[in-house]
Length: 262
Length: 324
Ligand SMILES: Nc1ncnc2c1ncn2[C@@H]1O[C@H](COP(=O)(O)OP(=O)(O)OP(=O)(O)O)[C@@H](O)[C@H]1O
Ligand SMILES: Nc1ncnc2c1ncn2[C@@H]1O[C@H](COP(=O)(O)OP(=O)(O)O)[C@@H](O)[C@H]1O
Ligand SMILES: [Mg+2]
Ligand SMILES: [Mg+2]
Image (cartoon, rainbow over all chains, first blue to last red):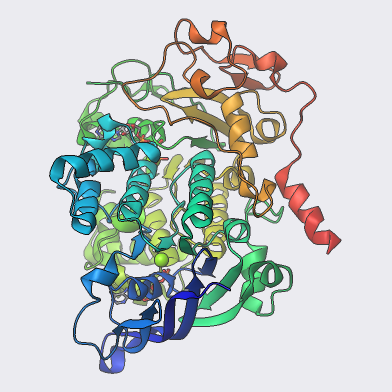
């Protein structure tokens, strides 16, 4: 039995104040063990990204706590942000390839920065490592020297993956990581994630609106709707016998089911 | 200056819907920008080839000519358009901008027109939504507003670059059926870019496949999905997750994506192709040639699919579900 690596307990996130306040995430419990891949699915606006941002320490919860390797590292009560020593262990691939890269930094610099910050390498070594990570994601040295604006959507998304993997994290939260890449590049990324999972015991939280991907990659899944986790269980069982009406709707909306828009 | 697209061919009739799929970085977005006359804004230009629209040749058209075409004759929903809606401005401010391009309207008229447009894209409580700011809308609503802006002047052609990428499946389906309905209501032709073949199969009549700046295959959607005549199209289909079991490696195309500036000689796909031989490595990117109801740029298209018809994925899945 592998032990729990990352845990979010009773996470609530409230945006706004007074009459305008609304809960984007409500008392959510999620957990992932070393070498495990879990999925989070749900419609847009259901709170998936907000929950992920709490887990990596980018968003303080209004209630609840985040635990890593059994230690509480971030909570509604703590004054500080997530400690630096813990932060590198959980990395995130961001959903939006258009806003997640600094437009004034060359592509290789964005990745080298992540390498350097976490591993304290000298600049030249960090650059080498960055170029290697980018190469692995199919970004040539030529493209690595560009600014993000001259990269296509899919190329930016692959840069975001390289940057997340740079510090050698223990947990990877992938927020719709394949939404902008073609199916073959998607297959490459999924193969890579599965290899890291098997070889390095990487824990993966895979957020996607593509149930086919979630079924393929994950063993457990959480279904979110308007801030609540409405269903959770083994992925295969949830897909075959969805209990919640919303889960059934999601499964029926997969394109190519012959009941499409055409 | 480097060529980023140099052998793209796309044609469509009035009211036809054509999908574009392809590798990321293959030039789909640049091709769309060429068709809407915005290349210059991205530091690029058309250096060869033609763009015909109706009787006009637009490849060398001046900005003045384009102003009469853009929005009016050809509508455009750019990739990342969800990020394109300004989060702090109201929907009204942003919509009225596309409407005022239609000529001199009073504020009142422009507002009425904006409400009408929101209703046309099936946004409930349109007058309230008009007052909302971008960040207050869900992804699906924002995309509806972007569509409303693109069709404000009833264009004859709508170009939508990955309009549903950032949306979840339930919303994706609503948006695709909205686009399809609008297409019929307005008698519009459609160019739809997507990296998801299943989406294109649902919505389009024809499809064009791009790899490394070139069109490598095109034809009716059904024909391409049943008997792909280019190894890249074939690879796209076999790499789909719904064809693999959990725990199995997916069939990704081996090797690296082709990058601009270092395209190989001969067919650009050969370094990653299991069918490649000496002939494939010679000369330049092969032209599209007719084969059956399709066009393919593979010189071995004839022998490519003998005896290996791919099952339709949708049917396979449906029958798997029915068995349960
Ligand atoms: N403004 C720009 N300046 C220089 N090169 C660019 C620019 N925009 C795109 N490119 C390059 O042109 C090529 C084609 O890019 P394009 O955005 O058309 O790809 P795409 O097929 O739309 O990919 P995706 O599916 O990832 O969106 C890429 O190699 C990209 O790096
Ligand atoms: N910084 C923010 N300020 C206010 N509201 C926000 C903020 N970030 C997200 N929200 C809102 O929280 C809800 C959940 O959003 P999000 O977590 O992005 O959902 P998902 O990733 O599931 O699409 C949405 O209604 C969204 O508009
Ligand atoms: Mg999200
Ligand atoms: Mg693009």
